Length: 153
Length: 168
Image 1 (cartoon, chains in turn cyan, blue):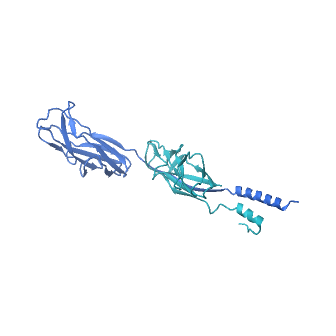
Image 2 (tube, one colour):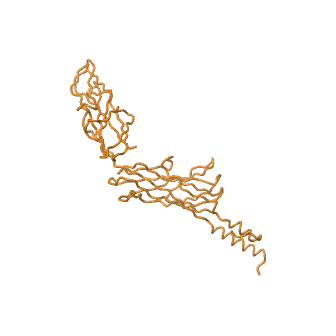
Image 3 (spheres, helix red, strand yellow):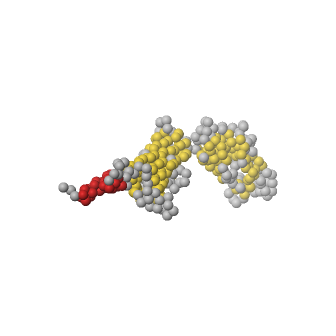
């Protein structure tokens, strides 16, 4: 940070204050489908208190953030040998601030979320989805990453 | 030559540009996870057979010893936990409104289609927990007691026993 040695430079210092230190983006909980039977599609609602994925974002009250989720199209078998389609639709995600008056803000996780922090400087995003295992899919553990990218303004 | 106020305005405009350009991106990730299990199959392999029954004389078929026990054969994910629930009749009927009471259900669990060494349990609508064998198999034997009335009408009586199996 430049030294604010003059009134002019001080104004620049105020307006160019870096966002680092004010922001936090973290993964809280995996999206867990649990036991999935070959040939049987399985859905997890974003409202599921145990299985839904969860992210946490913190900024400042009044601040704005644009959120994008990078979603997998398949889960991959640990150790190789199989893949399983995963899909996300409208309403498979919602954002909710932490203040008492916050209401859920559902959105399509394949799109962008523009969010303004009102009433509190933080919020959570919950994610559901659907897997469609084939009838002959090999048994085992399947996984893929879900990445959240948040741009703060 | 730029006046002092003009210099301040230019500087502020530049600072605003810098401020707008300092929008910051951050990322984090979670995982999507699933455990794929082989589908469970349940086959009714043998009917529970009471054979000839006489009015006023109860007759029992014991699930753990009697060759006339009913049997279900299951296949699924090797060594995985399994919950069994039953829908059990309280009467057998002859199709002509005559009822033959049936109760006191018995069950026995085995890893093969043999009652030798099977584990006894009581079938009910509540879950009985067990596991598939390492060979992905399970056999479930069922027995019960029928109690014909002294004036039980002669005929063939029939009921349905339903087994539901699910991983847990």
